[in-house]
Length: 87
Image (cartoon, rainbow, N blue to C red; front, side, top):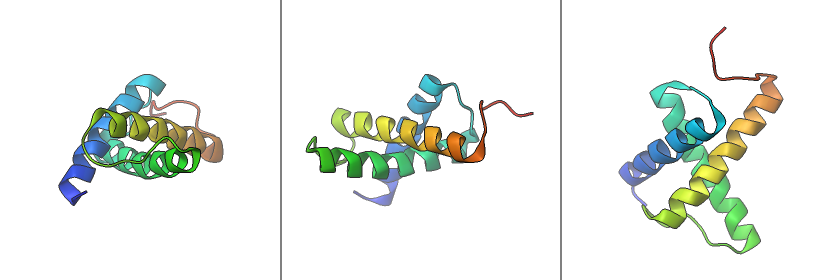
């Protein structure tokens, strides 16, 4: 996948993950979370035998969203942060 495809996939996955979890990371944070989520989700999915992130398709978006949710959950656990709202 090209860099533009990763950014678009990251934006989509990050946005969906933020809506599901109730987080607000900003535009750049959302894209970064989505891209990292796509990588994490792709690794987890390939280890479990479900496939990988192969481009801009429904399967890749689902895997990326699941990965992004994992990334946000781990980030919150490590940082002790409970919500996406600024304090």
